[in-house]
Image (cartoon, rainbow, N blue to C red; front, side, top):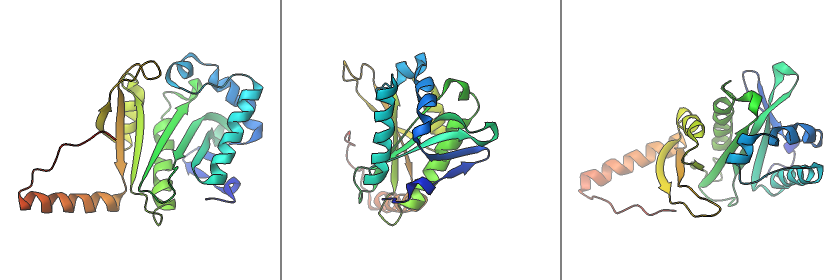
Length: 207
């Protein structure tokens, strides 16, 4: 839990990532007034009241330590909002967390998503190493090719496909995984030992 979360910032070149603020409400509404956002995101934000509740949910997430959302901004363009990056960690002692993101229409094609995701990934593995975090997952709908490219560019390998569950999830979903460097080393060592012992393992189950 970050009690002084207002002071937490991440940077990558001209990108500045910081917790969401009340004054971000107009930019948040403009971001959601976009057909791509309506297509890809399950949660929709329309109207000042809904936007205010969304911002409050992000603040509450920091307070409880279950959700760490960053507004991605362009420091070289007066703090222009480029998107949102979030780490979801409902289990404070678990080894697994989920990352998610969206970008505004003007930010697409500028490499902001991959740079911001890389920064969030490094922060997450560093910040929560002592609490046992070793694995991050990124989920997206299978036809979202842009998200697939961002995930793979940042080292999140496609590991499995989640079957569609209409009506909320009409298409299959992709699950990408990135492991902490130390966890990757340990896992490879374990795999080599298993191979030497002659085991063929078991069938993986969907989580």
